[in-house]
Length: 205
Image (cartoon, rainbow, N blue to C red; front, side, top):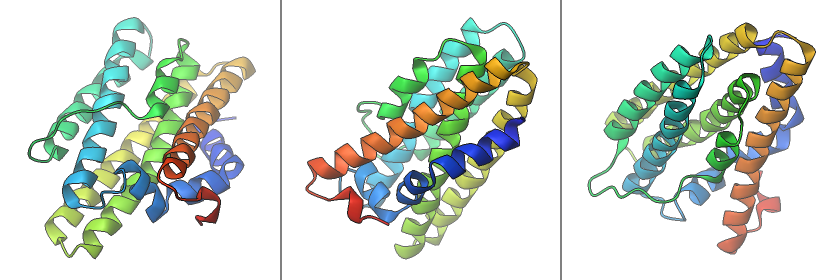
């Protein structure tokens, strides 16, 4: 097992969830049905603030290879969150997947959970790029393409970090279970949010 293998396994095992989390209805859920530029930016900013908070906590608790990576990612994601904030931005509740991510207290589980987070957010950001393309806003579309590239680069850093921190089958099991749990939390939130808005998630492809 290695980081790439685990990422492939998580994608395969949650194929339906990822197909739906990468749909326009996922963006509809993230924005609370407000498919406007400011709401899309706010959703992206909220996500990045949430992961930065978790990473800050973990960077102080870790003492191995993961600590400097967590610290670097916390700084990068917080800076990016601030650049994404629309005028009048007011933070709300963190997305549910971050409650589940923060639950992890072992290094393999933390890194595996982050893998799940990056796989999910890659789907979200792809939809955000498409939104601004459709909104005929090339400047914002380019900004979110840059965001997508940054998310993908950070995902690859997490995949590499998995190879450093997982030294046994038990470590890989812990990482995989955490990744699964984070993806499932994101998907459950997606389903519950759409249902609360009167939308049937099972009809989303």
